[in-house]
Structures are given as C-alpha cells and as structure tokens.
Image (tube, rainbow, N blue to C red; front, side):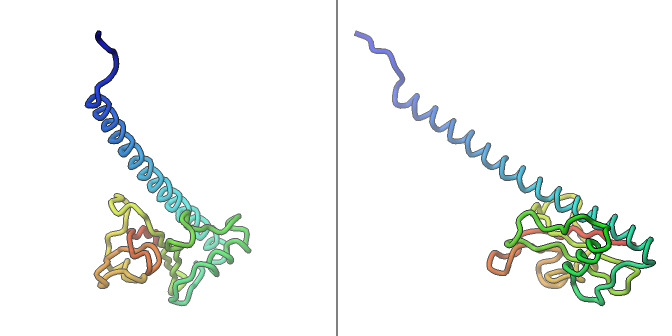
Length: 163
C-alpha cells in the first residue's frame, strides 16, 4: 500500500527556504525604516534652513550661538517668532544625536543632523566642517556621530550650511 505525503527532507528544505526569505524580508524592512528616518532628518534640516533664511530677511542676520553648539535656543527663537510651527526632534529621540545648530558670527550657520545610513550619498565628507562638531575631524571618527556614549557612534554627519 502506498501512502501519500511529504518526506522529512522535503519538509526541511521547505522550512529552510521560508526561513531564508523571512530573514531577507526583515533585513529589508529594517533598512527601509533607517532610510525613512534619514529622509525625515534631511527634511527637518531643510525646513530649519528655510526658516533661518526668512528670519535673516526679517532681522538682518542669522541667530548667533556665540560659537557654542545650541539647538534649544535656536529652535525656540524660530518658534517664538513664528518661523516654524513646532520644534524638530530626531525620530529616534533619546538614544540618538539631536539636531545641532552652530553660528559663530550671525553671517554663516551650520545645521547638523546625524544619519544612520553611513553609506548615504549626501553625507558630509569635509573633515574641516565636521571638525566644528564633537567627534568630528581628528577624533578617529571623522564625520561620524550617533547615539550616546554607551551605545557608541554609529552614524554619519549631514550638514547644511550657508554660505
């Protein structure tokens, strides 16, 4: 009498194929989430830069941070003046670098965000500009940034500046 069904080998091969496909799907999903957070960071930086240009047209110069890295005062000045409607925070929140603003003289500025995708084609590679920020040039982590000291540095800088 002949019985119908699958052999153990056939079942194991099928389960192996399903496991490989599931692993690939999870990896691609995680990469899509990283890219989506990076796009949000770039858009936020672009909106802040546009608000700074409107601020400059009204006031006659950019917000000066007196050579110190400042984000909260910078965003609260733009928010209080009606140049932005909300403050911008990094999509990963507490475990990742926040947006950073630097303007020494009120004539130029730098807005830095930290991208998770180190291979992003728009990342900043100019070590002189990266050196203005912590863990910039000369630290062995050129143009890198990221999470807190406990999580290590695992991203790359994206800097908008004018001029």
